[in-house]
Length: 88
Image (tube, rainbow, N blue to C red; front, side):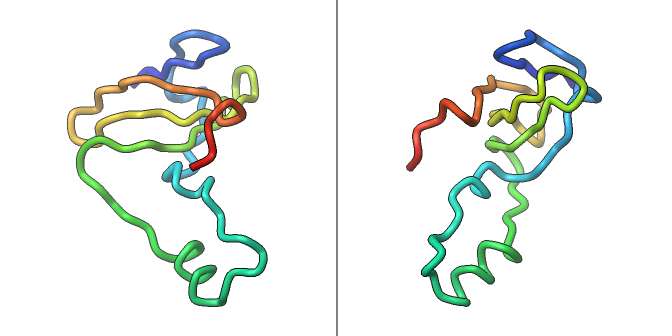
């Protein structure tokens, strides 16, 4: 699988470290209750199909990326820098 780094261009997946779902960027506030923090830390979806994931370009530029890809077909639709994403 090849991933499109916005800074370095298309690279082999082995240059990247997979962190998990991009929803992990949406942390609860420090004042959130125990249940909300527990859900954030322990509950994960395992979808089949199109996903948004966090990847770290470990052997490249060191950027954190949100990669849109399909877990069934392995198609990669694109990537963007985490630092430039709009907070939801």
